[in-house]
Image 1 (cartoon, protein in one colour):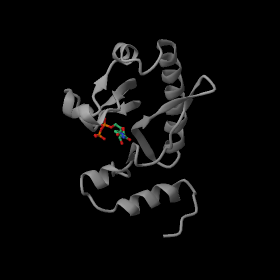
Image 2: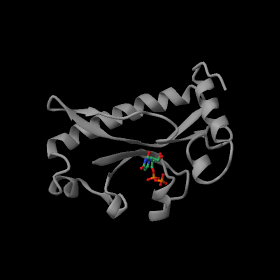
Image 3: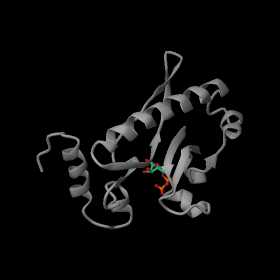
Image 4: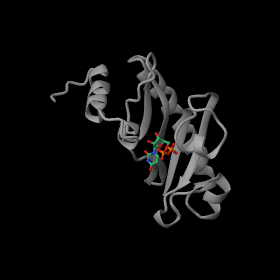
Length: 151
Ligand code: UDP
């Protein structure tokens, strides 16, 4: 029950919590863990909390971080090709046959994508911030990716 958040630029809850300027580029990806618990409002936790709460084994944290950073590298390049900045995203993991595995989808619902030229938000923030054009933005991401889309 952990949400792993990887951030390449400061945005969202991070700029509310800490004194980072929105859009600040990090010299290396920032990894955060959030405890999925509705009663507690999904609080941010550190690795020690996660282990002591028995949410994850210490050795699995290493694997989770390694997989997350690999995905980040792949997805940064993937979106760069279509002129989008991968600002941040969330991943969830599970266990299959004893192995830690990714158990998630990747879509504009779970990441932040900004147009590199205009800075336009092409993700769920359009909905969260009532900017309008949610469907249009999602379709544009799909079209830029070459995914055939009938809308
Ligand atoms: N995120 C998500 N599900 C959640 C919380 C966050 O997919 O329950 C994603 C969110 O879309 C963003 C990243 O994780 O790409 C970081 O979210 P943040 O902590 O900034 O929270 P938010 O501002 O989205 O509430």
